[in-house]
Length: 296
Image (cartoon, rainbow, N blue to C red):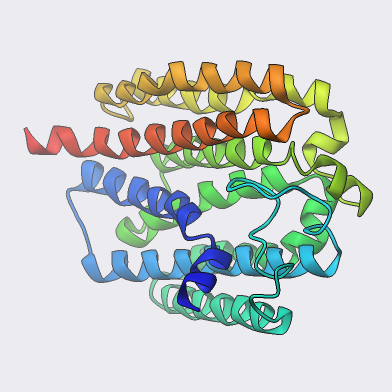
């Protein structure tokens, strides 16, 4: 039963939130040489609870709308398959999603009490957007934008909790993390195009069409890399942050793979996986780039 719950929570994708918090913590340590372990642990717990909530609620609503039964499932797309296979009851998944949302909100409430209005704004955005993600946000073509803002706010919020400040560094770092997360969601929406469209969803791929959407792939890594270059050029990030560019060959492979195979789920899957790997490698190297100078 535990393995089923881990599957529906999509544990393997929680790494995106772990990287986002880690970027904020590493950036703050590099800037201020400070680290509050208790606040860091609570931040990880709260962010992961909210991440689990959005995945659980998304699975519930996709099943209720019949989307999961119309799409071919892969490890990257098509839902978890837990509800169509009858492994869990829909009500149980919904209640778990709400429970994780409450846990995340409670932890966020603690930080509102200790850190004030800024965290209240971030928390309010998180709660509303998570609850309405699968019923309103995705249907309006704003899924990628939501994920980008969510990733950015995790970084900005983490730095603020640790330092009490919103800095240009944290905003740029947030843009980098948010763009990388959006890229994964973007390419994973290609296999679900027909099922999503038949049920009234309006993902970015549906809004612009598959052929045109392919060209948008390059925008996400371009934004991330430009933000890194700006940060290094303005001496907001250490020059070693350029190690994040190591993933360029993987990004190019994924982009051209999408161009050739955007209409075939089986052929596209390896490139969805390499896009996920590119996002993770770039994010992890970005975290490491703030830690290396402090070890010298």
